[in-house]
Amino acid sequence: MPEYTIGVDLGGTNLRAAAMDRSGKLLEKDMESHFSPGREELLTEMVRSVSQLRAKFGSGGLAGIGVGVPGFIAFREGIVRKAPNLAFIENFPIRDEIEKRLGAPVILENDANAAALGEKWMGAGKQVDDLVLFTLGTGIGGGIISGGRVIRGFLGMAGELGHVVIVPNGNPCGCGSQGCTEKHASATAVTAMARLLHLGDNLSAKQVDDLAARNDDTGAKAREIWRVMGESLGALIATMVNTFNFPLYLLSGGVLPAWDRFAPAMLRAVEQRSATYRLSQGATRIEQALLGNEAGIYGAAYLPWIEQRAAHV
Ligand SMILES: [Zn+2]
Image (tube, rainbow, N blue to C red):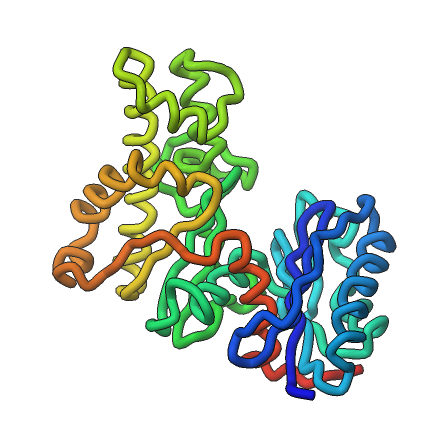
Protein backbone atom coordinates (compact mmCIF):
# COMPACT_ATOMS: atom_id res chain seq x y z
CA MET A 1 0.00 0.00 0.00
CA PRO A 2 1.48 3.42 -0.91
CA GLU A 3 2.00 5.95 1.84
CA TYR A 4 -0.69 8.53 2.40
CA THR A 5 -1.75 11.17 4.92
CA ILE A 6 -5.11 12.36 6.20
CA GLY A 7 -5.99 16.05 6.33
CA VAL A 8 -8.78 17.29 8.57
CA ASP A 9 -10.49 20.66 8.26
CA LEU A 10 -12.16 21.50 11.55
CA GLY A 11 -14.97 24.04 11.85
CA GLY A 12 -17.06 25.10 14.85
CA THR A 13 -19.66 22.34 14.40
CA ASN A 14 -18.41 20.34 11.44
CA LEU A 15 -15.35 18.64 10.06
CA ARG A 16 -14.13 17.22 6.78
CA ALA A 17 -11.35 14.71 6.25
CA ALA A 18 -9.50 13.55 3.16
CA ALA A 19 -6.80 11.00 2.36
CA MET A 20 -4.07 12.10 -0.05
CA ASP A 21 -0.89 10.61 -1.38
CA ARG A 22 2.48 12.32 -1.44
CA SER A 23 1.93 13.80 -4.88
CA GLY A 24 -1.21 15.61 -3.66
CA LYS A 25 -3.59 13.22 -5.33
CA LEU A 26 -6.90 13.07 -3.52
CA LEU A 27 -7.50 9.41 -2.69
CA GLU A 28 -10.78 9.83 -0.90
CA LYS A 29 -12.79 12.59 0.71
CA ASP A 30 -15.16 12.10 3.59
CA MET A 31 -18.48 13.86 3.45
CA GLU A 32 -18.68 16.84 5.76
CA SER A 33 -19.90 15.59 9.14
CA HIS A 34 -21.33 17.45 12.10
CA PHE A 35 -20.84 17.23 15.84
CA SER A 36 -22.62 18.83 18.79
CA PRO A 37 -20.53 21.45 20.54
CA GLY A 38 -18.47 19.57 23.08
CA ARG A 39 -14.99 18.13 23.41
CA GLU A 40 -16.02 14.48 23.54
CA GLU A 41 -18.45 14.92 20.63
CA LEU A 42 -15.71 16.46 18.50
CA LEU A 43 -13.16 13.78 19.39
CA THR A 44 -15.62 10.98 18.70
CA GLU A 45 -16.52 12.39 15.29
CA MET A 46 -12.90 13.00 14.33
CA VAL A 47 -11.86 9.48 15.30
CA ARG A 48 -14.81 8.02 13.39
CA SER A 49 -14.05 10.04 10.28
CA VAL A 50 -10.30 9.35 10.23
CA SER A 51 -10.77 5.68 11.10
CA GLN A 52 -13.13 5.22 8.19
CA LEU A 53 -10.53 6.53 5.74
CA ARG A 54 -7.78 4.52 7.37
CA ALA A 55 -9.82 1.34 7.18
CA LYS A 56 -9.99 1.83 3.46
CA PHE A 57 -6.29 2.52 2.81
CA GLY A 58 -4.65 0.56 5.61
CA SER A 59 -3.03 1.73 8.84
CA GLY A 60 0.43 0.65 7.65
CA GLY A 61 0.62 3.38 5.03
CA LEU A 62 -0.70 6.25 7.16
CA ALA A 63 2.22 8.68 7.48
CA GLY A 64 0.37 11.13 9.71
CA ILE A 65 -2.68 13.32 10.26
CA GLY A 66 -2.83 17.11 9.92
CA VAL A 67 -5.66 19.09 11.49
CA GLY A 68 -6.49 22.68 10.54
CA VAL A 69 -8.17 24.57 13.41
CA PRO A 70 -9.73 28.06 13.38
CA GLY A 71 -7.88 29.53 16.34
CA PHE A 72 -4.60 30.40 18.01
CA ILE A 73 -2.45 27.28 18.20
CA ALA A 74 0.50 26.62 20.47
CA PHE A 75 2.21 24.57 17.81
CA ARG A 76 4.82 22.66 19.76
CA GLU A 77 2.43 21.74 22.56
CA GLY A 78 -0.39 20.85 20.17
CA ILE A 79 -2.87 22.93 22.15
CA VAL A 80 -5.53 25.37 21.01
CA ARG A 81 -5.05 28.49 23.12
CA LYS A 82 -7.98 30.54 21.81
CA ALA A 83 -10.75 29.55 19.42
CA PRO A 84 -14.02 31.51 19.74
CA ASN A 85 -15.98 28.79 17.88
CA LEU A 86 -14.32 25.88 19.66
CA ALA A 87 -14.00 27.16 23.21
CA PHE A 88 -14.54 23.63 24.55
CA ILE A 89 -11.14 22.46 23.32
CA GLU A 90 -9.17 25.50 24.52
CA ASN A 91 -6.17 24.68 26.73
CA PHE A 92 -6.80 20.94 26.50
CA PRO A 93 -4.09 18.60 25.11
CA ILE A 94 -6.24 17.91 22.06
CA ARG A 95 -3.43 16.78 19.75
CA ASP A 96 -2.12 14.22 22.21
CA GLU A 97 -5.62 12.97 22.87
CA ILE A 98 -6.28 12.46 19.14
CA GLU A 99 -2.91 10.70 18.80
CA LYS A 100 -3.73 8.44 21.70
CA ARG A 101 -7.09 7.46 20.27
CA LEU A 102 -5.88 6.97 16.71
CA GLY A 103 -2.36 5.69 17.32
CA ALA A 104 -0.88 7.91 14.60
CA PRO A 105 1.13 11.16 14.71
CA VAL A 106 -1.02 14.30 14.59
CA ILE A 107 -0.08 17.91 13.78
CA LEU A 108 -2.33 20.84 14.69
CA GLU A 109 -2.18 23.97 12.57
CA ASN A 110 -4.08 27.23 12.32
CA ASP A 111 -6.60 26.97 9.48
CA ALA A 112 -5.36 29.98 7.50
CA ASN A 113 -1.76 28.72 7.79
CA ALA A 114 -2.96 25.36 6.51
CA ALA A 115 -4.79 27.06 3.61
CA ALA A 116 -1.64 28.99 2.67
CA LEU A 117 0.34 25.75 2.70
CA GLY A 118 -2.33 24.03 0.60
CA GLU A 119 -2.13 26.77 -2.03
CA LYS A 120 1.65 26.40 -2.07
CA TRP A 121 1.44 22.62 -2.45
CA MET A 122 -1.37 22.16 -4.96
CA GLY A 123 -2.86 25.57 -5.77
CA ALA A 124 -1.92 29.02 -7.05
CA GLY A 125 1.46 28.97 -5.30
CA LYS A 126 2.90 25.79 -6.81
CA GLN A 127 5.62 27.66 -8.68
CA VAL A 128 6.94 29.69 -5.74
CA ASP A 129 8.41 28.94 -2.32
CA ASP A 130 7.36 32.22 -0.70
CA LEU A 131 3.83 33.58 -0.52
CA VAL A 132 1.24 35.24 1.70
CA LEU A 133 -2.41 34.13 1.70
CA PHE A 134 -5.21 36.38 2.98
CA THR A 135 -8.55 34.72 3.77
CA LEU A 136 -11.31 37.30 3.52
CA GLY A 137 -14.45 36.25 5.36
CA THR A 138 -16.24 37.47 8.47
CA GLY A 139 -12.72 38.25 9.65
CA ILE A 140 -9.40 38.25 7.83
CA GLY A 141 -6.98 35.40 8.36
CA GLY A 142 -3.46 35.08 7.06
CA GLY A 143 -0.81 32.52 6.34
CA ILE A 144 2.83 33.17 5.47
CA ILE A 145 4.90 30.58 3.62
CA SER A 146 8.66 31.09 3.36
CA GLY A 147 11.02 28.56 1.82
CA GLY A 148 8.02 26.26 1.45
CA ARG A 149 7.34 26.22 5.19
CA VAL A 150 4.78 27.96 7.39
CA ILE A 151 6.16 30.90 9.35
CA ARG A 152 4.78 30.29 12.82
CA GLY A 153 6.80 32.42 15.18
CA PHE A 154 8.04 31.03 18.47
CA LEU A 155 4.60 30.02 19.76
CA GLY A 156 2.81 29.18 16.52
CA MET A 157 0.67 32.32 16.31
CA ALA A 158 2.30 34.31 13.51
CA GLY A 159 0.31 35.38 10.46
CA GLU A 160 -2.57 37.15 12.25
CA LEU A 161 -2.73 39.54 9.33
CA GLY A 162 -6.32 40.62 9.93
CA HIS A 163 -5.07 42.39 13.05
CA VAL A 164 -2.36 44.40 11.34
CA VAL A 165 -3.34 48.02 12.06
CA ILE A 166 -4.00 50.12 8.97
CA VAL A 167 -5.88 53.00 10.64
CA PRO A 168 -4.19 54.09 13.90
CA ASN A 169 -7.43 55.46 15.36
CA GLY A 170 -9.77 53.24 13.38
CA ASN A 171 -12.67 51.00 14.34
CA PRO A 172 -12.36 49.06 17.61
CA CYS A 173 -11.62 45.35 17.26
CA GLY A 174 -12.42 42.35 19.44
CA CYS A 175 -8.69 41.67 19.77
CA GLY A 176 -8.34 44.78 21.95
CA SER A 177 -6.74 46.97 19.31
CA GLN A 178 -8.36 49.40 16.90
CA GLY A 179 -8.05 50.03 13.20
CA CYS A 180 -7.25 46.37 12.46
CA THR A 181 -7.52 45.55 8.75
CA GLU A 182 -10.40 43.15 9.35
CA LYS A 183 -12.46 46.01 10.79
CA HIS A 184 -12.07 47.84 7.46
CA ALA A 185 -11.79 45.20 4.74
CA SER A 186 -13.60 41.98 5.77
CA ALA A 187 -17.10 40.89 4.73
CA THR A 188 -18.24 42.09 8.15
CA ALA A 189 -16.75 45.53 7.45
CA VAL A 190 -18.57 45.68 4.10
CA THR A 191 -21.84 44.84 5.87
CA ALA A 192 -21.18 47.53 8.49
CA MET A 193 -20.43 50.19 5.87
CA ALA A 194 -23.63 49.32 4.00
CA ARG A 195 -25.56 49.85 7.22
CA LEU A 196 -23.87 53.20 7.85
CA LEU A 197 -24.83 54.35 4.35
CA HIS A 198 -28.44 53.20 4.90
CA LEU A 199 -28.27 50.61 2.14
CA GLY A 200 -29.76 48.00 4.48
CA ASP A 201 -29.12 46.04 7.66
CA ASN A 202 -27.06 42.86 7.56
CA LEU A 203 -26.51 42.88 3.80
CA SER A 204 -24.12 40.15 2.69
CA ALA A 205 -21.00 41.01 0.70
CA LYS A 206 -22.75 39.42 -2.26
CA GLN A 207 -25.76 41.73 -1.85
CA VAL A 208 -23.50 44.80 -1.67
CA ASP A 209 -21.74 43.50 -4.79
CA ASP A 210 -25.12 43.25 -6.55
CA LEU A 211 -26.11 46.77 -5.44
CA ALA A 212 -22.88 48.13 -6.92
CA ALA A 213 -24.12 47.16 -10.39
CA ARG A 214 -27.03 49.62 -10.13
CA ASN A 215 -26.89 52.80 -12.09
CA ASP A 216 -28.25 55.08 -9.37
CA ASP A 217 -27.35 56.71 -6.07
CA THR A 218 -27.49 53.36 -4.25
CA GLY A 219 -25.10 51.87 -6.81
CA ALA A 220 -22.67 54.75 -6.33
CA LYS A 221 -22.69 54.27 -2.54
CA ALA A 222 -22.11 50.52 -2.91
CA ARG A 223 -19.19 51.12 -5.28
CA GLU A 224 -17.74 53.55 -2.75
CA ILE A 225 -17.85 50.79 -0.09
CA TRP A 226 -15.81 48.49 -2.36
CA ARG A 227 -13.35 51.29 -3.07
CA VAL A 228 -12.76 51.86 0.65
CA MET A 229 -12.54 48.12 1.25
CA GLY A 230 -10.02 47.74 -1.59
CA GLU A 231 -7.90 50.64 -0.36
CA SER A 232 -7.82 49.18 3.14
CA LEU A 233 -6.82 45.77 1.85
CA GLY A 234 -4.22 47.39 -0.40
CA ALA A 235 -2.63 49.06 2.62
CA LEU A 236 -2.26 45.65 4.28
CA ILE A 237 -0.85 44.02 1.17
CA ALA A 238 1.61 46.90 0.65
CA THR A 239 2.79 46.36 4.23
CA MET A 240 3.37 42.68 3.47
CA VAL A 241 5.20 43.46 0.22
CA ASN A 242 7.38 45.97 2.06
CA THR A 243 8.06 43.46 4.83
CA PHE A 244 8.76 40.31 2.81
CA ASN A 245 9.42 41.17 -0.84
CA PHE A 246 7.74 37.86 -1.72
CA PRO A 247 6.68 37.22 -5.32
CA LEU A 248 3.07 36.17 -4.61
CA TYR A 249 0.10 37.40 -2.51
CA LEU A 250 -3.10 35.37 -2.70
CA LEU A 251 -6.65 36.26 -1.72
CA SER A 252 -9.39 33.78 -0.91
CA GLY A 253 -12.71 33.66 0.90
CA GLY A 254 -16.31 34.72 0.59
CA VAL A 255 -15.56 38.27 -0.58
CA LEU A 256 -13.65 37.08 -3.64
CA PRO A 257 -16.58 37.15 -6.11
CA ALA A 258 -16.52 40.96 -5.72
CA TRP A 259 -12.90 41.02 -6.98
CA ASP A 260 -13.68 43.33 -9.89
CA ARG A 261 -15.24 45.85 -7.49
CA PHE A 262 -12.39 46.12 -5.00
CA ALA A 263 -9.27 45.00 -6.89
CA PRO A 264 -8.66 48.25 -8.84
CA ALA A 265 -8.55 50.35 -5.64
CA MET A 266 -6.54 47.64 -3.89
CA LEU A 267 -3.89 47.53 -6.62
CA ARG A 268 -3.70 51.33 -6.77
CA ALA A 269 -3.10 51.42 -3.02
CA VAL A 270 -0.32 48.81 -3.23
CA GLU A 271 1.27 50.74 -6.09
CA GLN A 272 1.15 53.95 -4.10
CA ARG A 273 2.33 52.54 -0.78
CA SER A 274 5.07 50.12 -1.80
CA ALA A 275 8.25 51.14 -3.57
CA THR A 276 9.25 47.47 -3.44
CA TYR A 277 6.15 46.65 -5.47
CA ARG A 278 6.86 49.39 -8.03
CA LEU A 279 10.52 48.44 -8.37
CA SER A 280 9.60 44.82 -9.06
CA GLN A 281 8.09 46.04 -12.34
CA GLY A 282 5.15 43.68 -12.45
CA ALA A 283 6.96 40.64 -11.04
CA THR A 284 5.10 40.91 -7.71
CA ARG A 285 1.78 39.16 -8.25
CA ILE A 286 -1.44 39.76 -6.35
CA GLU A 287 -3.97 37.12 -7.40
CA GLN A 288 -6.96 35.03 -6.47
CA ALA A 289 -6.22 31.74 -4.75
CA LEU A 290 -7.28 28.60 -6.61
CA LEU A 291 -8.36 25.97 -4.11
CA GLY A 292 -11.17 27.84 -2.34
CA ASN A 293 -12.57 25.88 0.62
CA GLU A 294 -10.31 22.94 -0.19
CA ALA A 295 -7.05 24.76 0.50
CA GLY A 296 -7.10 24.04 4.24
CA ILE A 297 -7.61 20.32 3.86
CA TYR A 298 -4.77 20.11 1.32
CA GLY A 299 -2.45 22.02 3.62
CA ALA A 300 -3.41 19.85 6.59
CA ALA A 301 -2.68 16.71 4.58
CA TYR A 302 0.68 18.14 3.48
CA LEU A 303 1.89 18.86 7.03
CA PRO A 304 2.95 15.31 7.98
CA TRP A 305 5.21 15.20 4.91
CA ILE A 306 7.17 18.33 5.77
CA GLU A 307 7.10 18.57 9.55
CA GLN A 308 8.67 15.18 10.33
CA ARG A 309 7.49 15.39 13.89
CA ALA A 310 8.60 12.24 15.66
CA ALA A 311 5.64 10.15 16.64
CA HIS A 312 5.42 9.82 20.37
CA VAL A 313 2.60 7.35 20.45
ZN1 LIG B 1 -7.86 43.21 15.84
